Length: 373
Image (cartoon, one colour):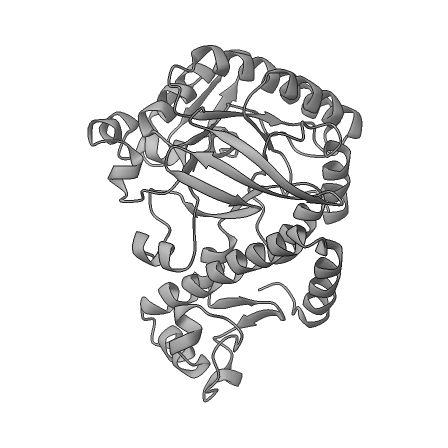
């Protein structure tokens, strides 16, 4: 048996439940991965992550390449050892961060030249370099270098897609470690024909998993859903699908309903640092004066440490007092909310009631959801 393989256990409509085997353990899918950009999920220890049920963490190639450096991480035993996380890890290619550096980067057929946001120094990222960095970091799942285009620009989307395809082939050729799973990335903006073309090409490369990039980058929810519906029948059923950078509760549910297995997003921890709590009845802004003397937990049905031990009043006090603990407690809750949502959705798939679960969840969530915080 190889280091990495995927077992599809059940399908309910397009929704899928599976087991993803990696060198650092087994993942039950669908799965949400907290984001540890700088080799840490902000405000949380690895023990806290394990305690709230996290099984997969994403780390950022661009940031770790610039600081402390991938070669240093390799000398210190790799990213798992460096950040004291012994469960599965996923790294992105660094491409999205580089391409978001407006005015600081220049793309050509061979790669991209960019200036560091830290000190302005010039760097060069090619498919081969992206693989070398990720091999030094040592994550279980690694990404091919891709180019993320503005979703509504057809000409740019087509050019970026073709460049992404060429770079994926070069990433495959550059890969040397057999204990890492390289995922190719589907691009194509919001154009069904481009997405279909990209899915066909990336699937033909035979990578053990396939990522879906270039969504949740400015298009509407309806456009994102439409692209996922285009891709579902075109992607190999026996390989896991990873929707990059998507993680609101409604997006997770809608993504699973359309065949996605893996998600990641900074949203739950970023919201926690901005005083917001995710619940299945919508979002709460705990800085509001409504919660000054509220003795209830964030969510009476939640089993996380925060909800078992802390009142809304206490959390609001920490926020107003600018205590760091507020970010930790809210991050624990927000991540547990998404992880438990995925656990419940997985169980619904196994029992053949995914559509009913999603319908009920979305009806309540939409009804109670306040304006964006």
